[in-house]
Length: 427
Image 1 (cartoon, helix red, strand yellow):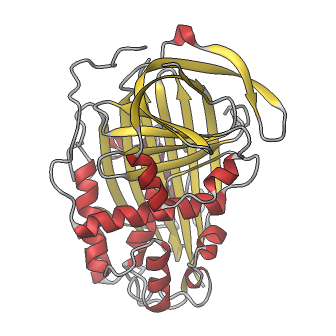
Image 2 (cartoon, helix red, strand yellow; image 1 turned 120 degrees about the vertical axis):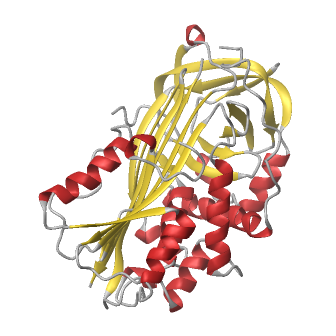
């Protein structure tokens, strides 16, 4: 898929949806990578050392805001002893589109939770559009695609300005369906199923409720090879030490070479690059006397940037478990705790989306799936929002850790996760 090209279903591998009762489904993402050994997966891959152009001030602010939102969401959603895998970028985009239909305190709260501070809507929309355009095609050895779609109930009035905003700023396809027809949910779920490579089957019920008026879907696809591959023959079974003192026997992959590395009194960190090194997985491993939740709690955009700036190429042996995880979470309470409260009840003001009164977001839900193995990483995330009418160093990740998938040059975080139990979900 080319940069800024409106995607067909087969081109997509993440979808985000905010479901309107009036309804918006949230965000679906697929991330897939491949690779395995000590040599680059593609020796001819060109190393990406800088962005094709300088970031605008608004883009810098939106990236910082998105990362701040990521850590706020991570802190709210994290539960001791439980796995977690979210796409803050996908949730941010889905909510960012919805902001174009909000007004008054509802709009202000959404802007504040997403961290956009003093930016006006035009600056936010423009920064989203140009940033996504920048990310797509940044690394020729990594496949990336971004798409948005809006599905509305036949006859439900939608303001022309809202349609124009999501089309122009988010390049969204807008379609009207007869939600009372059984084929409507099949068409939407089929789009999502294809977009998610079958990892997420359904986001819309077979019978769409009468009070559902709209679905907004954001889709992001990422697929790239590890820059330096793990050798499958080096994988060995070993104990993984859970926070409750118990252990699980898991396959630990091994890689030894020069990698971006950092250590402090609280954690070790390593950056595992993909393709031409524009994208990477950053892993934070707490020291034995620090829990993974204690490590996650104080993270924020400034400390994250300091961490990223502190990496130094170091010869290190990395032991990383193979794991597969499915995750689903309703984000209403998390978003409300961060300050977005009016949108979820009768106080919601979505008057710029439709002239119909009594619209509110009844649910924002994200589904994700991730697998990490010698071949690389495959991940999908779906966020559904419902708006209703009414060297000598060793990095041994054998205990719970945090992991992030990011674009290094701009600093954009695509995924944030916590592995508490590698064998918790095997499906």
